[in-house]
Image (tube, rainbow, N blue to C red; front, side, top):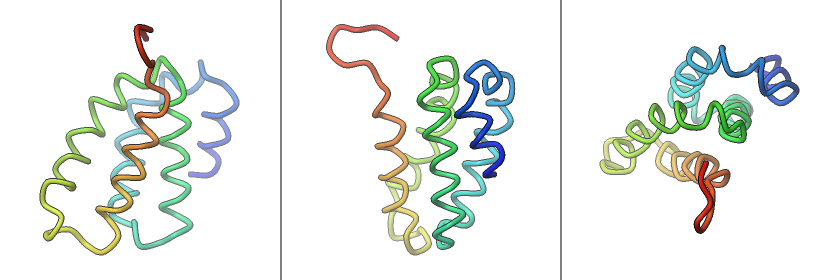
Length: 104
């Protein structure tokens, strides 16, 4: 995961073809291992790096938002730390969004 983070951060164009595989895998890994602080932080960093790439962001949002929304809508049914971490990931995904009248 750390190696993929380096690649995604280093080369936007290299991240694009892999984002359709990397994003869902990273999201599943993050959700399943949210109690592991190192793994969940690295997974969040990968998602953030993908979100910062304008070519990867739309697909990442289409994948992640429904997953995060289902977690947040039913917080009592979630394992410890998943809801809080979901809010962190949601913030990571929203940060690169254009503000005001800008378009992506």
